[in-house]
Length: 339
Ligand code: UFG
Image (spheres, rainbow, N blue to C red):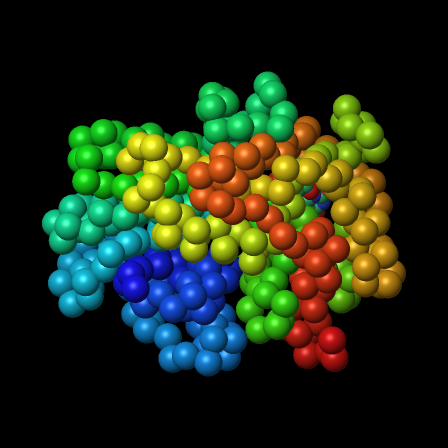
């Protein structure tokens, strides 16, 4: 079985992926510098899998740390989750985002080259497309000008990977373009831990429902969509995690040594219908109102996930209802309420 390094392994998507890989029998090493996370999800991973995890605290920008780690462990593959991901923060602190997200990428690829580790999976985002001209969007769509420094780092990392893969044919690279990951593990032992006031819709919904926030504001109801609110492709984080397992399994069967995949359900859902679905699924009274549009929001985007189905043999299995139910169970768990 392959030995796989997960950078950002204590984060939301890293932790869910660790569970799926461990349950499939892969040998997994997690690293995290805890700059945007803490160790609370690590316990959850151990509880779900019943295995002691191999975790090392460290920063991917630290070449000495990486060198020591790669000398000790003989990795077959790297899945690179570690990155800053707040759109708002990236607008306020662009240098911090460029420095962190680009340097961790170059340091990792460099140490991989030195130790002849050739399988690399990169956490990308549908943000690389901006507002696409054709929806559902497929992987051939051009990159529009990035909406934020965060988005620009994802575009630049994909470009960087393209160049490195062109120069080194031994490297096998896959970029996974996430749409909107939501939900939590059905065990409610791991889930999303937003820092401060959440920017993202579902954590804001669950925090409002539990009483941490006074009300949810829906940003705009005059878009060109059936109910006027924005359209997104909400994907259960466990489905998303399983796409990483498939990528690890299939990385040597790809048509080229650098491929990108959309990870979404293929279904566009309006913000308002998600909120109504949450109320229906949980039976919770949610205080919400319509407010002005949020600057920088894209009207609608959802995936054409056909390429992932054809080449990775992956598709989503979990519904929006399950995503919302699991997100709610996790929020209740955090509040120590019976679920
Ligand atoms: N929304 C609200 N109220 C809120 C929060 C969000 O109405 O309190 C709406 C937004 O306006 C948007 C939708 O819910 O229409 C989804 O918003 P999110 O912030 O949850 O997600 P985004 O689609 O804006 O952003 C996500 C990721 C980014 C990534 C981007 C790519 O969070 O990391 O997709 O398009 F860059």
